[in-house]
Length: 319
Image (cartoon, helix red, strand yellow):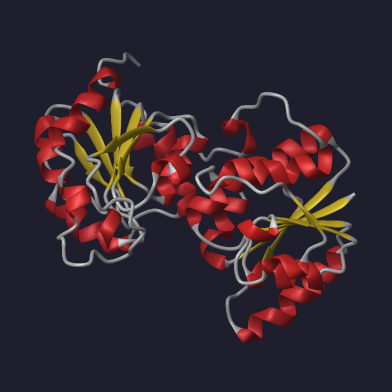
């Protein structure tokens, strides 16, 4: 059997899907798996220990034809359309696979359902995306037994400069949405005085990271690839941050993640096993990328003390 996974985009979504290839191969060792993904998340898929071919779709009109050629060359028997948008549905259909498994019509978007011919049951809108990904895979190979998420990737090595930092707190400085970003990092670091802390983020947060430096704090924001972030996270005893891609990466590694939630719903999008901190303001979740005039109150209402108290049990761990 030759299976094509179509999951193109966001780091968090791709990270949640990384368990699928390993589970498919555990059920059927002879299955060959390709994954269609956009460049931003392709390095994550390359860490999978069960994906045989990574097909990168450059998100332009010029990128469509090379992606189609690579898919047709792989010649899948089945596609798992985990994106549920029109773009993913198109690639599922154009693959020529006889079986094209996707989301229920009422759970898909942008007429995605017209491109596929097998569907999972309709899920409650509050069910997690990973649960729905698993349902698509089970449609192909049957129910899964228990599993460890971290077994699904080849974990990059821990950087040498972190190997003797125990206990180690990972602090994620931001996300792709400004409404998800937390403003209490500086005050939290005051509470974490004397602890080993590594700051994690993109180039957009590198300047913030530099402004937060103090004894015991290492700023790696903007200085790592996504693969290297996995190595850093694997060294941490606890990770703190918003609803973000690196948060899902920590969850995949089964590192305790204290997830700070405001504009999104933790029931639907929190990483598996996350320790959720939320202020439960009346306007949340709003799913807005920009706050409509309330000054990001949902995130501001999460106090540094609330977060520190959740982290405290992990700070006593011995290496």
